[in-house]
Length: 341
Image 1 (cartoon, rainbow, N blue to C red):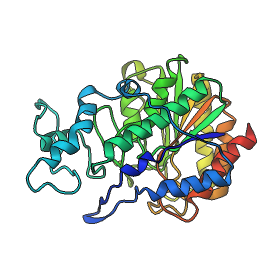
Image 2 (image 1 turned 90 degrees about the vertical axis):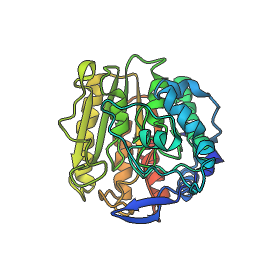
Image 3 (image 1 turned 180 degrees about the vertical axis):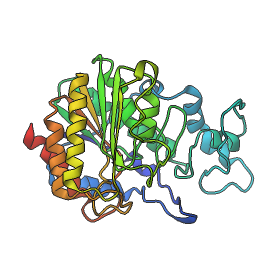
């Protein structure tokens, strides 16, 4: 399996992370990519540079005003007197009967759902590079590759059409799925990140052409807390095309694989032409966010189960944070997929 990667992700180097009232260094660090690259090297995956696709694929998913905000944000912020070293909102307006703001501080609050998405001088460049990585992988699958892995950083599945959140700015998995829709009438997204893919769900919630399935730690006790429950099934034309499978905190391999069996059956019944896997590796028993307890062998089994779905597949990297076995878990899931194909 080929892997798409660019060093341009390093321009995004966030620092701020608020955890239960305590400011810490964020877990979404450039070193994540180094450890994932080591996993790709161990699996002997060929690296491919992404193609620059421009705004077109991003505009299929995100609003023009949101993309304009991200592109202009740092310059406008830097022009403020006494501006901080990162953009972190001090307000998040409820949008009921609200007016879209023109001031950069207001726009920052409008377009961020939480404080876990600080914007720095290189955030826009890094986010655009990540979306190009995802689209390049999708295009390679459209051109005939059986499966391609996209090493996207920053991740994307918490980003809505016009909201950043949870380390995410551009929804790489949604952008890849929308690109695949140019060839396939229906596309499925399977999110195996420890956190619910709330942004992805929101983007496709009223659409019948993209199935969204998310297996994640129960949001009753885990981020994002207010999305990701089993009763969320879609609305309007999209009713029935969203499936959430929340798992008890600490669920291990066998419990996870049972949920994946249910997810695979739902995907097969939807009969899509291609599959996007939002590949979070933070369900690991050693991940610092500690939501689930999947072993490295469990990730191999997850990869094998995904292969059995039998679809052209784009793996888009989502979460997975600094632990000694992050790279080994990536090697395992991709290796399990390849061995079962």
